[in-house]
Image 1 (cartoon, helix red, strand yellow):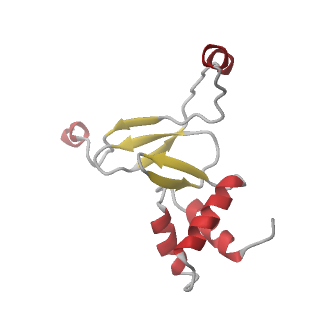
Image 2 (cartoon, rainbow, N blue to C red):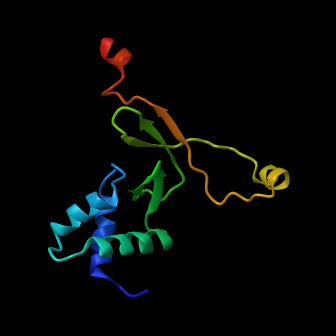
Length: 127
């Protein structure tokens, strides 16, 4: 694949934040650097970056969010503000058992642990 300045800028924007941004946020940030970029170009490049393994797409209900952390990890999700926090979690599941019981081979495992972040956790703020 040939080098693309636009793709490099988009990748750097996604990888520079831990906020798991939407495509619209990435577009807004990219326009600050590349004034004439279109939303369609941002979407196409996000898809290419995901396909080549430079970023991950996280589907959060009906919204795609982008993650520059491509290492295996999972997320805490605040039910109040929607904030996602990267965590390492040993998932230790048996692929062979899943395949034999359900004839299904998992290629990726994503866990969301739902709750409230420190901004919204009343128990923590009372201490």
